[in-house]
Length: 284
Ligand SMILES: Cc1cc2nc3c(=O)[nH]c(=O)nc-3n(C[C@H](O)[C@H](O)[C@H](O)COP(=O)(O)O)c2cc1C
Image 1: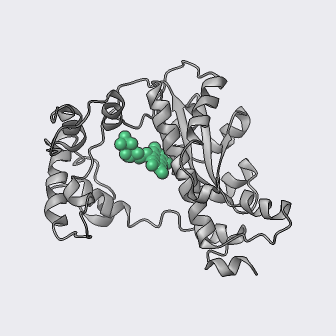
Image 2 (image 1 turned 135 degrees about the vertical axis):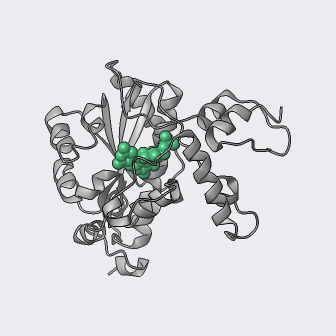
């Protein structure tokens, strides 16, 4: 029983992980361990009723304080989708996926409840923004897992926030409603690759935070990933960073993180109803 998940764990982490005892065998858990993002879809349509089922599952996700601050836009109108997709020509799956959803953090609805009940609504505090983001992210990932359970492939799309002004115009977003990520849905056109994850030594802490072994853990991870799927011929911006003799995941992510991605987002949020301050700010 202890080795029931050996193949899946090896696929995900690149080594055998001792789970430390017997665990129940579960087909869905195996599927979660083997999950992968899919960016290419075949022509098989997805019925509206299946989308509605997936959205029902999505909004079954847990929700901070039961505030239910996630919303979704199901982008069905082709012209509107084309306008959105045209903003991101290097991600053609945004326009090509049979179904495209946008998961929204929605701090507006809670404030509107206050108005409906005759209470002074608090709007823009960081807490509201954060809770709405978490709710939307949980709904998004629940939708991903539900979709994968019925054989669909998915790809979240946070690049939407890089053109936040135009995206908000296309989706007609009111103040305090913002995209957390889009989501492509479609039946996969290929098997796809499993993206290896960091080992538990890097991401699982027991009793207290301790990253003293991070360097070793990441070095080993870089090598395992490289053995399966090398990035050496896809080095990011060598003109700026040089050409690395060994180019692993950590070098790639460190370089990627040097870009000021999302730099206009905070400014946009502040222009659209969020103060991003302490909760007291919202009651003014
Ligand atoms: C919040 C979020 C936003 C993402 N945004 C994009 C995106 O804009 N474009 C894209 O192609 N993939 C996007 N992805 C997919 C990630 O690149 C992918 O999850 C990651 O490489 C790990 O691969 P895996 O999901 O196959 O394990 C996003 C994933 C998440 C969770």
